[in-house]
Each structure stands twice: as C-alpha cells, then as structure tokens.
Length: 305
Image (cartoon, rainbow, N blue to C red; front, side, top):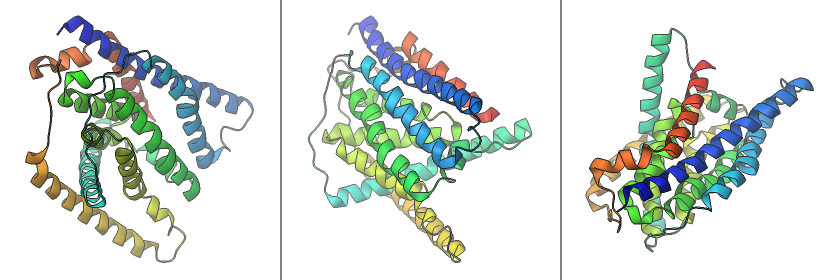
C-alpha cells in the first residue's frame, strides 16, 4: 500500500466535503446580506429559514460537492444482504438508542461549556426547526435531509473507499457526518448514527435501507410527532407519553445492540489500513484538515450565537 496515494485519496474526499461546507456558508451569508438589504431578514420566519437552508445546502452546496466527488474513482466493496421488516425494526431501535445516547453526551458537554462560559448555549438548529410548521418540518427533515445525507455520507463516500476496509469506511462516514452538523449538540448522535448507517449500507449494498431508517429516526427522534399535538389541550399528556416511549425504545435499542455486538461482520479490504496508522493517513492530510477547519469555524459560531 502506497501511503502517499491513499493519503491523497482521503485528501480529495476531505476537499469535497470542505467545498460543500464552504459554498453552503458562503451562499447563506450572501442570502442573509440580501435579505437584510431589502428589509426581509426579520420577516422570513422559521419556515422560510428552514426552506432557505435546504435550498442552500442541496440546490447549491450539493452540486459543488458532487462535482468534486465524482472526480474520485469508485472503489465499491459492499455486500448484498437483504433486510426484512423485523431486521429493520431492530436497527431502528438501535438507532434510537444511539441517538439518545449521543444526545445525552452532547447536552452534558454543552452544559459543562455553558457553566464555564457563564451563559446558556442553546441548540440553535433545533430551536429553528421546532418553530417551523409540520409540513415544512417533515419535508426538510424526513424527506429531503435523509435522501441527500445518505447519498453524501454513505453511498458516494463508501463507494470510493471500499478497498481500505469496513472499519475505515465506517469511521470516516461517522466522523464526517457528525462534524458537518456543525455543533456539539448534534455531533455525537450524528456520528453514532452515521457509523450504524454506514455498517448497514456496507452489509446490504442498498442505500434505501439507511435512507428509510434515517427517515424513521428523524420522524420519531426529532420530535416531529409532537408537532401534531402542539395545539391540543392534551399536549402535556402527549409529551409525557412520547417521552416515555422514546426512553423505552432507546433502552431497548442499547440492549439489542449490546446483545448483537458480537455478531457484527467487519471485513478487511485489500488495502486495509492498519489501526495504528489509520488516523494519520485518513485524517491528517490537507483536504481533511481543511474540512476540519471549516467545521471548527461552524462549531465556534454555534457556541457564540
């Protein structure tokens, strides 16, 4: 294995994701300036903000990302396992468990940071989403985001690094997916889910499975269901039932994951990267470091807001 060649591949991958982040933020800044100039910045509202964000990421940022990504040769090495309804149900529960565990870690970390800084730091992304109405929220988080994100962080990525082994593909998919969310509230659960969805794609070779699970998790775990009852006089009851149900599913998911952990299948690639050198080769290269710098800027902004 030529380390320089492998490092170059991951550098090009990092550059593709950096361009997505850079172009998205650039367009968001330009749109924000234009809206301010014409006096509409304060009247766009949550729904407008959500739809603009979707357009900026997937109508502008994604094509730029795709242009760079398609220039990297495919190196596909995935399985062909079928997933029935029962298996999908088990992975859904595991997804809920990982999501809630990641949420807990992120919230605790930001609680500590808030105490150090002496001020509250809120999850601004979730604050905006929960102010939107249900159709817009479902469109953005349950339809558009899962489709594009599974293409970007699973299929297009993993199809280009198959020779380096399952462990590398899963690690890279999870870390990049977590970082691109741009804040510590979402980093951990996005990273955990990204790794699980990567594993599913690698074993099945079908992107429809992680897409479906992503949609299910966003619909239930993202509290979209509570929007159905937000104007009901029984909202407190619905909230209590929902919270208990999520906790039960999360605990069940963690238990299932622990029970099935030894059954996982992780295959080595023909150019397997040794564990001792994996971090340095995969992440310590110009493209990835540039991507990390862009994400760090986003993390800082999220804490300054």
